[in-house]
Image (tube, rainbow, N blue to C red):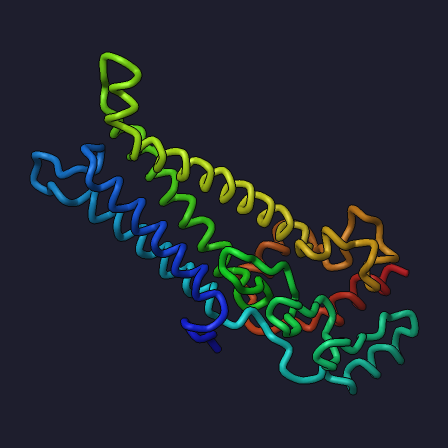
Length: 262
């Protein structure tokens, strides 16, 4: 399920496309490391760079438009009754006060999207979409590919600065490239911080929302602030995140790992 391209977030996606395309053209029009070389494949590096940027942009649109894991119906009440009867201390699922659907564990209502999202991580204003159970992996892949494109762009911009006798001449000759270098540098730092923080939380099987609101979430109140009832070790957490298809019944994981040790 995908959103409409012309729906909510159209302006943000347009701004992203214009910024990406503008910076790419600016880098390619200068004499840099990726400029056509005097060899057998003069246009190979520019083509590879444009391909990388295109793939990154395609992933951006994919994660921006795809369903993050909307809760479409009530969670299985029969399954919940069986769970609570076997484990009286189990946390009962709450009904959303906005869309009135019974939320599965780890879901949250997003006021921006006006929908409940399974395994809600956060609402990202840059993609104008939630990051949840269905698109979180694509979001991580997008960040990784975007980081590669940005690091290459930093190298390209650095190689394109012209030498000059005075600072005023240097600034006049390199002003546009300098602005591009600064914008790319800021974006690179932001993407690195995002990717590192998300990989850390994934390795702990914790979402951004759970990490930020641990003390307010009913199924986490009985746990220490530095532990998660869903944590099964770094390797299993990473394997579960990247290799599990379909929706996960987090109630079963929670009951097995929490009440089996009581």
